[in-house]
Length: 253
Image (cartoon, rainbow, N blue to C red; front, side, top):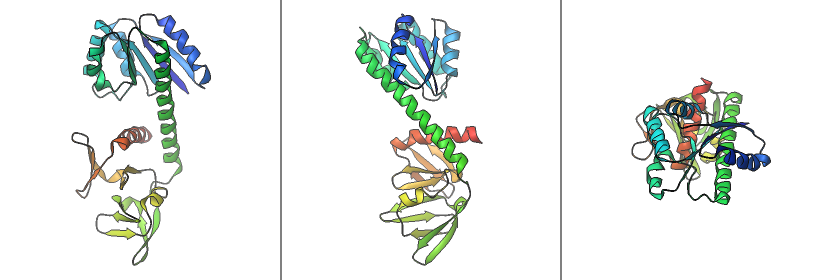
């Protein structure tokens, strides 16, 4: 895989040499992009990077202004992987909105930098693996299929496109559809493995059919609103994976 290392630092050669040594143990191709204190170039570069990029910014007043301006210009840009370096501890709260991999105080301890840099690379590789897995699953499984569900009245054949969501009820699973509900005698985990990839486990108790979701609300907690009017909680841990899945689905459509 390719990884872009974007350096917005004072001594680019020093950082590049150290990073090159750190990446010797990783099976990656590295592209170095060095930014100068140029408004147009830096904003365009940051806005155009892909998921496989680690942006290292040694903050001074000018670069902080560039960062704020970039964020205002491109508010919908997906979460990027930042490592911020600065001698000013009070900047840390202002940078929370970027969800950085790390904020490192100067004078720089390169042992600390090495550890946090590897953390950033690990996150990129993990996300890349997840995206690849989602793509393979999406390509290999049928979107519409029929599954057999053992319930109290016998075995029911359910078309997956009719399912709105599944709800865990202890050892049982409830299938919710527009005109009926079916209580099945297996736990939700077993059905998760049978369903097409358009079904997403948003919570330990719920799996939703994303084709039947009208809206995802992130303003007060996280919920998805299903076409029948029900709203399903999304756990914080699942929200990031859901956003990643939806971005890949958009690319696949």
